[in-house]
Structures are given as structure tokens and as C-alpha cells.
Length: 176
Image (cartoon, rainbow, N blue to C red; front, side):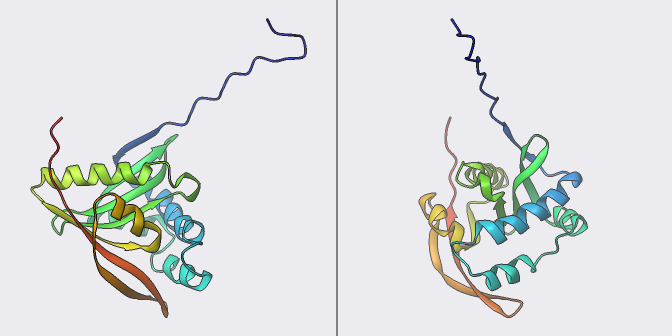
């Protein structure tokens, strides 16, 4: 029984994240996810000048990201119809080109789920291992997911040297 000064509270429904192939309309959101993941999400691992150089490596324009969709198999995590994370996969090379998640949603399994889908796609195409050049943000998480470290690398972006790691993972089908 409710007292007159108490209100019945109904919890808001949790936002549902769905996973799918990228659509042209996702390109503008991809640009924003990339920019904010670098500028905010990587703030504890890279300095401001490094993040600015990294963010400027790819245009903050939908047309550039739409063009990348034609180059790579792009998987999207969508919430309320908007892209909140994405992964670009080069199937023929067995490489994950990019993996970014909106900063406030990081650590909730979105990137992991994108990885699981990418690994399944690679296996379906007969690819037995996947490679990625991972930032300091992803390095430890990917090692926990079974990726092996092949060594540290330094990449130049607009005059800044950024540290990353080359990782590889052997893929195997799981019976269900």
C-alpha cells in the first residue's frame, strides 16, 4: 500500500544494444564514436597532443566513414537506432582494422561482442587467425580474450609517436 507522499517508481527500461552490419546512415555516428573514443576514452592512456594527432588521422565526416564501409566489413553496435560502437574487419587479411565504442559505454561488453561476431565471420570465411594493432586502451583487454602479443610498435600521426601493440589470436570453432 502506497502512502500519499510515496510514488510508485517504475524502472526505465534498459537500453538494448543490437549488433548488425553497418549501413550508410551509420557513417556519421561512426565518425563521432571514433572521435570521442579517442579524445575521451583514451585520455588515461595518451596525452592530449597524442589524442589530437590520432583523432585527426581519420576525417570527422560521414563520407569518409561511408567510403571505409566499402573497404571493410563493418559491424555496428546500435542503441536506439544509433551506432554506439563499431569494428572494421578486413576478412581477406584476417585483420581487425578498427574497434571503437562510445566512451560512456566502454567496459559493458560492446567491444567484446563485436569481437565475437568478427571472429565468427572470419571462421566462416576459413580464416584461422586474426590480427590487430591495438592501442594501450585495448591491449590488456585483448590479451584477456586470448590475443598474443607480437610486440610493441610506434606509429606516427601528425608528428606524434603513438605506442601500440601488434596482437594475434588463433581462432577455433566452438561447438554449441
